[in-house]
Image (cartoon, rainbow, N blue to C red; front, side, top):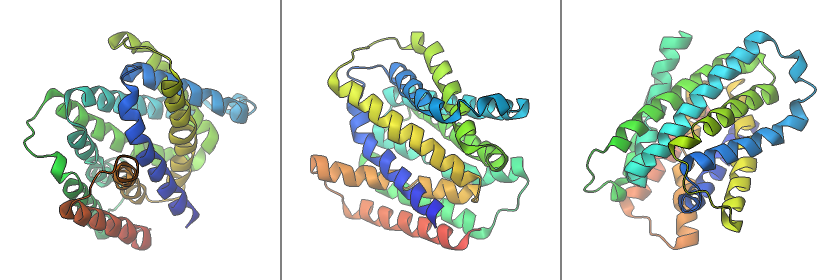
Length: 280
């Protein structure tokens, strides 16, 4: 129950950060933002793992390197894709990862997929589509949509890969290596989108907030959860992020939630509750 409640808290943090991240791109390019966010988070991990690093085995470094690379690719594709598509469509396409997770889990981990996992994943995605319905009207397929779809695949691959190794690697160490690798690649790819780069009170706040809560804390929590829980269950719970994003938009910006979106929220909550209760 503790893992489930902390995962829900992570989805809450991710949902809350979505409205504030939308505006930070006025001051920082997406890649500059990612580089700063991952760099600060890496520094936060250092005091915790500094004494443990010398005991890390080569295969553990390898697992962290692969997981971190998958994480960076997913973030990079989604963030750049957001420049070429609508936010509502980006969020919905990214959410397709919840459908890919049980498929990749079956192919890579060779584990049997329970019916409740398949149904919960499918209905969670249907709920997500209904939630985004008002923002999906009159959209056309853009380059960003294909990039975001690729990001969804890499998010699913990263979750499944981490779930395979999380149980036998120290959670802090495994999280640290992934974030450090993502920070390194983000810095390397800054030349692809170097501008803008303007440090203001707002941009500094967003970087620090996302680094501490949406990266440092969130990564530790979901890596820890994947060491104990079914990867499909984790994926379905994490897809609840848009619920909190919508609620935050209602509170901060007075946005309205229509009846179709409300039905979508109910379906998503039901899917999360079902897989949390019935899946192993």
